[in-house]
Amino acid sequence: MFLDALDTSLVGVALPSIQNELGLSNATLQWLVSGYTVTYGGLLLFGGRVADLFGRRRVFLASMVLFAVASLVGGLVSSGELLIISRVVKGIAAAFTAPAAMSIITTTFHEGSERNRALGFYSATAAGGYSLGLILSGILTEANWRLVFFMPVAVALLVIVATPLTIRADQPESRQRRSYDITGAMTITGSVLLLIFGLVQAPEVGWGAASTLGALGAAVVLFAIFIAVERRHSDPTVPLRLFRSWTRSSASILAVLFAAASLGWQFVATLYIQQLLGYGPFQTAMVLLPVGISTPPIALVVTPWLLNRIPMHWVAGIGMLFQGAGIVMFVFVGLESNYLGLMLPGMLLHGIGNGLVFPTMTIAGVQGVDDRQQGVASGVITGSYQLGVGLGVAIMASVITATVVGSGEGAQLAGYQTAFMTASVIALLGLLVGFIGLQIRRGTPADAPTAPAEPAGSADATPPTAATAPQQ
Image 1: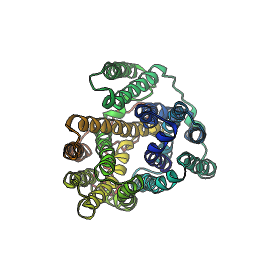
Image 2 (image 1 turned 135 degrees about the vertical axis):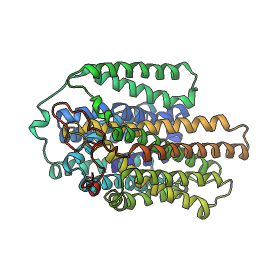
Image 3 (image 1 turned 180 degrees about the horizontal axis):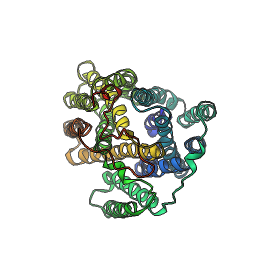
């Protein structure tokens, strides 16, 4: 998680330098980010299923090696096309690493306060990686942009060496029952790939373009086929009973809205700070740093403590309220850099909200799931987050394009303010979903199990934390 966040923030700041040295067009440059996003988000569900079937540590190690090799190649090549290919391969590797990593945690630590603390730490490492990436990005890019590709290689090598020493070997029973639901795997992977591809390219070519409509339409068709296949398969790629849980389904929707608001805001804020406020890349990184700094202590200490004392829907609702409030403050910044009065408080509120929501939605997304299907459940919640990233950036880019009329600063400011307000509305929707959807429904029967049965702690019948268990 640290490595993924580190890599994302490193590459983002280096894009202008890469463009200048390699002579890339804006369309080509976009795919250095989009190529990674499309394959990462599109293959997550499949990656989670593969981890469940063939062993989580085995899949984790293999994909981490692939990630390191792709990053090394990206730092060595001098062709824009080859650099994009390396990013696509890194996205594929991350799609297998992420669900394997999360499912290793969820199958190692028991559901309740122990897992809450573990997932709080897991979430805090994301903010830590993001923050360190912001700090290093300006320093490394000023020296040589290739260093931003070599830095993740060093971290990946440390992980590869440490994994056999710290993570137990895969148990034989994790590989006893293998499913070859090829049709289900292909249709859901194709559907998500096409959906994210359509969202990513829509701001550039237009929402009404044939390529956009074709990609989104094909995604819907493949998803319908996937549902039909999974309903009939004896051991499906993605068991549909995972979504019978009100809590888990709501957690996935919350992940989409949370990511759309947070990463959509970040996309707009980065452009706004540089293009209107006149900050350089390194200054921009430092301005955004409070978001990353304020998230880890909340995710690591405060959120697990709260989840053991109050229902999770309150934690999620308060978190989305903080996030939305932080975004709204940017609407009032204007053309003057009111950093201490508006920007800094807004980013601190945003970071606190992230620290409350991210672990909570992750815990809710894998709650009550049998160990044999933790990889798929992790893939679902992570994939929902990645879908939200693509959706948020696409919406914000479209809003800016539609609302900026003219080339003056006032016209651009109006576009950015509209985009910030749009992100805050998405956060408000996330607040409603989190507060209503993550409530435990009393008297609701547990998820209908199939062999092997899910544990008695179904997300619909069991409270979200150990503290409330005796009362239920």
